[in-house]
Image (cartoon, rainbow, N blue to C red):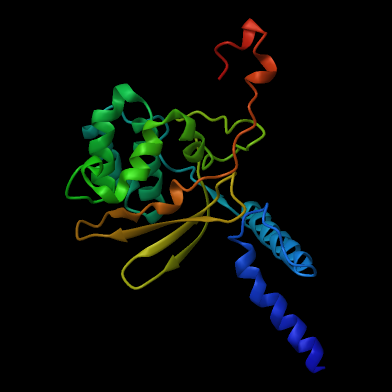
Length: 231
C-alpha cells in the first residue's frame, strides 16, 4: 500500500514539470514514461477546454478605423471582462498593419490603462517587437477560433472570434482564460475594472508567448501563380 501511494505521489509531482519542459529534452531511463503521461493529460485537458469554450459572439466585427471609434466601442464592449480582452485583440490586429500603427498605439495604451505609449515602456519591448515583426504575427492569429498550425493560423482580423473558457476572480482583478490553437495549455489575460466601470487589460504576457510554428503552405504552392496572393 505504501509503495502504491509513493508511486502516485511521484507521478503527480512530475505533471507540472511536464508542462514547461521542451519536447526534445532527454530523460533518465524510467522517467520518460511519466513525462509522456503528463503531456498526454495536459493535452486532454486542453482538448476538453476547447470543447467547452464560449465564443465572443456579442462584440462588434470589423476593426475600428480610428482611436476615437475604438474608445466609443470600449464604452459598450469593455463593460465585461471578455469584452476588454476582445478590444485588446482588436487593437493588436490594428497594430500589425504598419499604416495603422499610430492610431493602434493609442488604442493599446487606452485598453491597457497605460500612462505612456507602450513603445516607451521597456516592459513591453518583446511585445512591441513581435507585433512589428511579421514573422511573429501567427502568435496573435492563433487566438482566433478556427485557426491551427495546419492552416497557417489563417483568419480575418475583420471577422474573428475568441474562445473563452473560464474566469477566475482574484483580489482586485480577474483572470480570463482563452484558447490559443498553437498551445497545449489555456492562455490567461488579467483584467481589472476601474472607477469608470470599464475593464482594462493589466497583464498580457500570455498573448505574445510563442506557440507552435505554422505549417508553411507557401513552399507547396510556390510554383502556382494562383496562390501568389493567397497568404
